[in-house]
Image 1 (tube, one colour):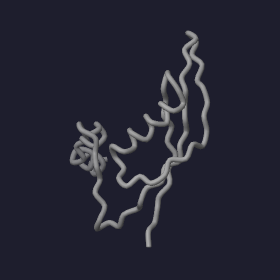
Image 2: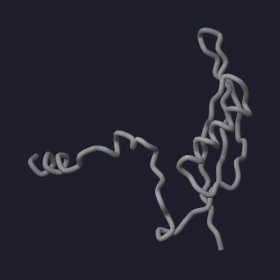
Image 3: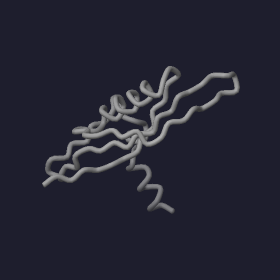
Length: 97
């Protein structure tokens, strides 16, 4: 038996809705494994003040949900700054207050 998780993502492009969708899928693949389905939910345009048009495609992605034994978090490189916070100083500050 399998379980799948579903999330919504939005990709953007200055060329087309198809490229916006591909951007969303390719970006999601960097941190999600076992992607199964990408469903186009919505497409719209962002109209810039300078006349630039940005194509936006909202996708609903599904991927296989893994048990904790199987799960492996794939982090971007370099790690986001919020992952690099020194928590020892935060707990010291909390206990001192």
